[in-house]
Image (cartoon, rainbow, N blue to C red; front, side, top):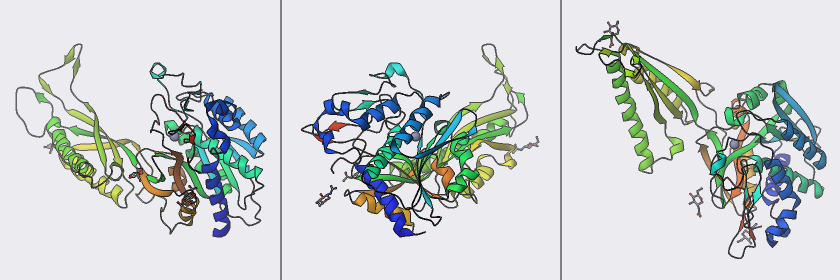
Length: 435
Ligand SMILES: *[C@@H]1O[C@H](CO)[C@@H](O)[C@H](O)[C@H]1NC(C)=O
Ligand SMILES: *[C@@H]1O[C@H](CO)[C@@H](O)[C@H](O)[C@H]1NC(C)=O
Ligand SMILES: *[C@@H]1O[C@H](CO)[C@@H](O)[C@H](O)[C@H]1NC(C)=O
Ligand SMILES: [Zn+2]
């Protein structure tokens, strides 16, 4: 890659992105915030209820097309699955060479709410006297999408123009797995044509000047194991009943689970770096109208586990072997299957290199260093659309450049922007606060 122009694109975008909401006019108090155009745009977007499981993306697309026009970005809508549109805004770069492009990604959908648990209605974007804006999506991740656009507005106002193409992507479906959104997009000719070099996507909320950057994520394996045995009367003993065989597996799974949990408890590894395995269902017996038949040993018993595998080299192969040989061995008349299993490349879940051997990483690091901030690479515990880009061999880093707000992703009373600090004049929230 041409790292000099890459530098300009990424550094400038991220720098302005971090800085965009920290203009002086912001430090005068919430009355002025009401009038602030960026705040108004953010709240307008939050008021569009793109809530799963059946979001109507139409109004969000209409709003965003309006934004693209105002900002001066080309825009086109793609639809790989009916009613699940994907919007691509493009700022053409000046270079004639086919330089890898920058994609700034955000998903439009949000998770459901339990409205009665909210102190303000979740789609009203209420702003309290501290400047906190309450709404579903105010952290995950409408805030990030709007930060991209505000950054681009400022860049344009300063007369800056990118060398390589910059795409702002608005996608559906992320909160229900993303297969109909990024999943389809990643395999399309449209994606190939973007010639993406780096995707910036959502990440963890950061607590201080150290930005948490997700460079990979755990694989989700939803495992069902089944044990078979002869059925027999409940009053007799025989070897190798289905239940007996399953209990041997459960003992083995529990021992492994404890070993992993102990690593976390002892502070040797964070949760993100161990295998998590939790029992989610047990199924056996012959139901009667008011319970179960009590004198028959069942011939089939099943157990379900939510297993999360960290993207460590060889870990997938290691776990596959363990499941086949210890948790559900044929020799014990057992079988297993996965209801969900994250796709892998050569058996492993791909990660993005998060050190200076990846020039995009170096650029991001340089960009945040201008704000006296550093990066802390982490494996994400949950899933994001980044994995689809990584599967295509494209770098993807998850960073939600918000600091000093509690982590409220998927929680009740999620809020974004905060204005706080001893004198009430310090700006926190959507961006870095001390500029
Ligand atoms: C910043 O936050 C991280 C957690 O993301 C924590 O590990 C670290 O100790 C904090 N640093 C300071 C200086 O508070
Ligand atoms: C497996 O099933 C076969 C056939 O039903 C039986 O003979 C054998 O004892 C079983 N073995 C175990 C370990 O359950
Ligand atoms: C970063 O730290 C230096 C030295 O302490 C200071 O002069 C500068 O203003 C800080 N920059 C920002 C953006 O906070
Ligand atoms: Zn999200």
